[in-house]
Length: 289
Image (cartoon, rainbow, N blue to C red; front, side, top):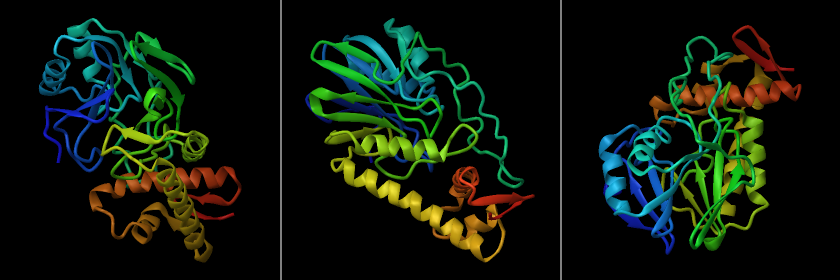
C-alpha cells in the first residue's frame, strides 16, 4: 500500500503522490505524477480532495508548475486540477471535455454505474491532440491519443526516460473498464495496437505500480479481450442470452461489486461484434447473427 500524501521518487525525473481514494475502480488510489525539477508538470491531479491537493503542494515545495496535465475526465483524475491551478497559476492542459456520457444502450438491470463518473466542470486552458508537445527544462511530454476507456483519453510519453504515462488505458493492477456509450471496445483495441508499435520501456499508470515489461502486458491485455470476445461468441452459439446471463457465465470469480462494470464491458464487446455483423439484438437478448 502507498503512503498516502507522501512523495515517492520513481525515477530521476518522476515523483508520485497517491490520493487516499482506494476502491474497486481505483486500486490503491489515484497516483499523481510530478515530472521534472524546479519547473515541473503535474499529471492527473486527482479527485476533489483538499488533503490530496495539500499533499501535492507540499511535495512541490515552491517549484513552478508549468502545466497540469489530464489524461481523461473521470472524477478520480481531473477535479483537483482546479484547486491546483488556483494555488499555482498553472494552466490546465490535456484531453478534451466529454460532451455526453448518457448511458444509452445499456440494458435493463445494468444502469451505468459510471454515468456520474465524469467531471462535468472540467474546462482546460488548452486541449491537446495526438503528438502535441509540452516541454520544460530537461523534460518533454508528448500527447498520445488512446481512446477506448473513454473517448477523450490521452497518454503522455516522456522520451528522456522512454516512459509512458498511460492513465487508465493500461493500468498496473487491473484491466480497464470500457463502458458504452463513451467507451468503445474497437477504439480500445486499436489504442492497444498503437502502443505495440512504440518502444517505451516503462509505463506509469495512474493506478498501480510502474509496468516494467510494457509490451508483454499490452499483448496480454489484447489476448484477454480477444478471449472475452471468443467466450461471448461461444455462449451465444448455444442460445441467445442476456447481458446478465453472459456476466454470470464469464465473471463468476470476479468481485460482485464489479459485475455492473463487467456488464458494460460485455456490452462494449457486443456493440463491436454487432458492427462486424457477428451478433444481433433480440430485445434484451443477444444472438449469433
